[in-house]
Length: 389
Ligand SMILES: Cc1cc2nc3c(=O)[nH]c(=O)nc-3n(C[C@H](O)[C@H](O)[C@H](O)COP(=O)(O)OP(=O)(O)OC[C@H]3O[C@@H](n4cnc5c(N)ncnc54)[C@H](O)[C@@H]3O)c2cc1C
Image (tube, rainbow, N blue to C red; front, top):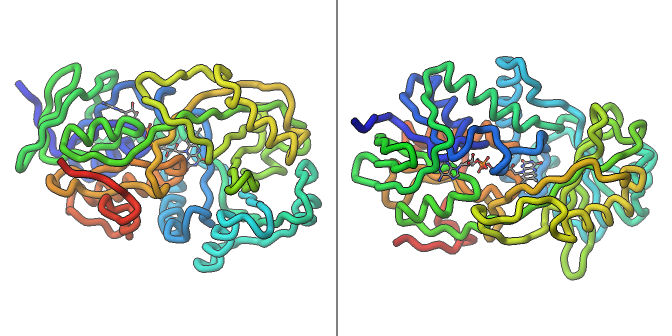
């Protein structure tokens, strides 16, 4: 007999697992379905750590969501025996006249009265002796930001969701979805389930699943290398060095690098945020080092700005972004089937918001509305070209 739920969550990664918890704790009968057993190394939430920053270079509209997310992460930490967040602070810097991302982060801090300290290149060098910042660069320090332990976050949401009665079906890829007027049928490798409401939160596979319900979204999954390098532990350990975002002029545009201090001897972790290598997540080459750029860009960046963190490669990984044309998320109800909510296109900067996105999805699913302002995430905004079949 087909089992029926109030809500099915299709994809229990960063966003879906959080939604599952916020629904289950309200007594909703929820099923979390995933192709793997989250947390896992096939999607976008692995690699141990994610940056949470409150002053926001991608747009000041994100600040209220970042602050709510931080509150929810702090709440989660209290319920958990796992480490969720460490407040190491964040720095950002870029060329004085050519760093719109850094400028917007500083402006967003001012607009929302955040604790953001403006620093010249010289002040950055004085404060962080491992940094080689040219005089024509400037930036900021934000003490309240830091590191989220992403796999722990997903693990804790899973444990709490199950504790509150959520059911899970893992190692179970969804192969088809049929949307009817007041219910959905979810066809998976392990069987068929039905529910009143559905959340599609399948990360880099979101485009494949939304097509099943007639919605073609302009989502581009990309292959993203990230690596850990041996570093001078005195200069770059997390007691003295924060997370970082650096905007560097590159041809007609700018490259953006991000990274983490070393803790427990793990090395400095660094990635390139603007690097685009479009792939199909089902066939992507997941071997770090199989492409020259995997390490090349990162090494160049470290040699220039943090040479004492450019030691031997300790480890590397390939992860997935799912990009939208304007870099903003898609969080919305399906335009025709309003009992389906979609959380997609997190464009490489979504994890920090997973807690608040989980809250938003639970509200959208239960009431059709959310108390959060999600207007920039609407599927029919001008910056997004899409078609409905
Ligand atoms: C290297 C790297 C560094 C990053 N750094 C940061 C950072 O510092 N700060 C930040 O905020 N963000 C960061 N991000 C981005 C952030 O991690 C992502 O935006 C976020 O994890 C996306 O969450 P998601 O739920 O959409 O995807 P996922 O967490 O990948 O979840 C999607 C889930 O759906 C499941 N699924 C897919 N298809 C199906 C199917 N057919 N049936 C069943 N299940 C399915 C998958 O198995 C997966 O578990 C980074 C990303 C990468 C790759």
